[in-house]
Image 1 (cartoon, rainbow over the protein chains, first blue to last red):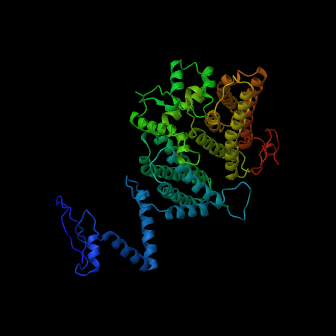
Image 2: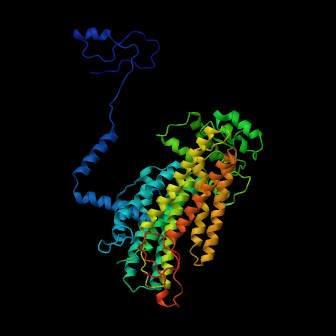
Length: 245
Length: 310
């Protein structure tokens, strides 16, 4: 049975008193009472870590939930970030809760739709699936490395997340272009596609700079934004020159 | 005291020596600075950069250099090569566009502080611009001669980027190696570090970016004129930068080196022109037999525009 012996403010008590007396009437512990620490620090109360127990019960609850709940929760998070990209405001939702599901979905969609068919395999056609994939991911990694080397204080995956999510307007432009290409070819066809791609390109740039620009030192913002411009320009070019076989 | 200036502490004596002399008289100082690999002595004459941030960042980089240059496996090592501001990069680009005879690019614009940002992104931009404008000439050719089949020609992006990057990294490596060898033979020669050489080459390629865009204009003599002008500016920049270093050498070696440098540059320019840009077919008024459409699938440089259609 633990009992607090003396208060810490007690001045000059040099007599050693046991901090914990475990049934001091028994003989065996009389020796114990001789061994005591010179400074008795009373320890009162309980030690609990309420946060940890809360997390533990949160974890077990997500383990037990149904698969549909898990998937829907992730899809809702991805959808929420899509909304943030489409209406870019200065919020840091993309940065705080980053995930790479959205960029993966967008990149796979883009690459699937941009790849040239294997039937018509001319040597100088459009990009293959792997080429688009590599351009998107290695482009994003290079831009992230560049911004980190310039002294930005954004983390690696946050930057990848932002760059990947901001491909959404260009993916929408690709869908529109595919629909437009179903109509008859001609200069009007091309002008419509050009207009749509330019608008979506500008939207991507605005969205990504809204998220990324604040993480750079102010005298290097242009240096960090220019590679983003080049990246989306190349993707826009691939979308604009897409010709179905 | 040192707020707008960036001085490296462990080279302080040489810094004061350098500062004591007029900034224009830099060509004879190269041998003093050459033994140290990375002398970071920069005197930024303009205090127009953001002073607060600059002071903090220069303090950070000074601390890095004080700690005997972090090893090449650390992130901080590479961060020291990207320690430039927007205004510095723009100033270096301007310096490469307008070379002047006494104006050494390395001394005046790099100020012994080479960066990797400029060469890397200028090469990337040039590679993509080459592929894209080359593709656009195909569009223009198709509008004149509808029998040409348009295709995105995506493989040209790979070719362009490999060529440009190899040129910007391997040729300076060879040049730097050659200069080091000559310095071993003749002690009085100056030397640039490898990164400074890469910087000079990288920034000298900038003038080709607007040239390549202007090559879309389908007027042949204008294209050649623009190409010659760009080559002259770019090669002049290289020669003016290399001259103070090689003039200590024998005239023969100096002459051979400079002409090889200019020749390689010219080869790059002409190779790009022939491979990525195909000559336009004549106006559709002419009879179809004289159409000079080149098949788009060829990987060889197309011949001059007197050839007949396949």
